[in-house]
Length: 95
Image: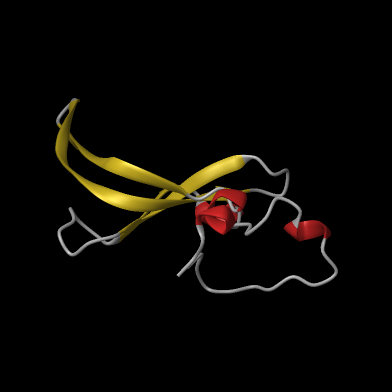
């Protein structure tokens, strides 16, 4: 269990309707929506460059893990001051 306070400090959010769009010809079509926990991904200048969404229930559209933006150029910070700490922990994913 992660407290709401920790989630808010880390910048996590909740998307009640994460929208899944696909391009059909020259038009975009909404394919479905689902509920997701959302993690911000920042670059070295602390600019938001991507969002990572994790489905929170078994009924979801497409992959349970979706990233929009180039996450390879950034990272999820558990706290805004994380890079100024004496120790930094690196893990595979935000969860």
